[in-house]
Length: 300
Ligand SMILES: C[S@@+](CC[C@H](N)C(=O)[O-])C[C@H]1O[C@@H](n2cnc3c(N)ncnc32)[C@H](O)[C@@H]1O
Image (cartoon, rainbow, N blue to C red):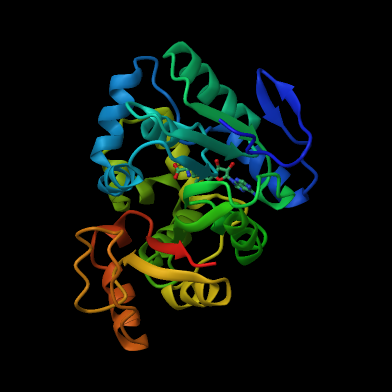
């Protein structure tokens, strides 16, 4: 793989590292150090990660559309499970970037143990802007920007490393679609954990006292930095930065099919976008944390 880093680094456990300077990113890394997200089970191997990835329909579509011999970046990869999923069975070059070294050490250990060689991890903060310009064909950044001090600033840095005609997927907490979680968060502060055991649908599917459960509660309800966004906000980010809107979940338009997220759909109207975001409250997107996803293609 060519050099995907444009700045000097030092190595820790063979992982290229950059010294963290930013106060809010340090706060976030302290948070994930306690409960790396998502964690590995002792029984995890290539086949369980593949199986887990194949249950994530969005990840399946993304991987299928990547094809072969591409440079792929996951920003905020945490413990690298998704990056590893993207690398298994392909000749693509995958890079996973995250500021939490403890999470990356788990990712690195797993990939070495399972002899996955087409993957590299980088310990860096988005704001340090360490990635080579116009290098990646595909970028996945989901569940990350809303945990930074400046989501739009972070977005502008990320897209520098995307090639022309390259695709970008971003996933953010939705201002409307996350209402159910915000209500649970408020009740949790008042009444404690019992409320979550009853009201959080994701927790119902996770084993009691499991690490996954603890990581989910911390991530959803006690994160130190969190912001909420809308489809219109992201469309404006795209507009200002020469990124063409391709598709989204939920759709921007009433006619949206979401069958193949790499096929261009209409942006709809302000009204259709608001209605589709309201509908998140009542479907699985809203019950699962209110994350919405937008895909764009770099145009220049
Ligand atoms: C909720 S986790 C999501 C992990 C993974 N993307 C997923 O969806 O499972 C948020 C991740 O964003 C990373 N993150 C937070 N601030 C960041 C920053 N400034 N630069 C890069 N990554 C960051 C955290 O370290 C953490 O791994």
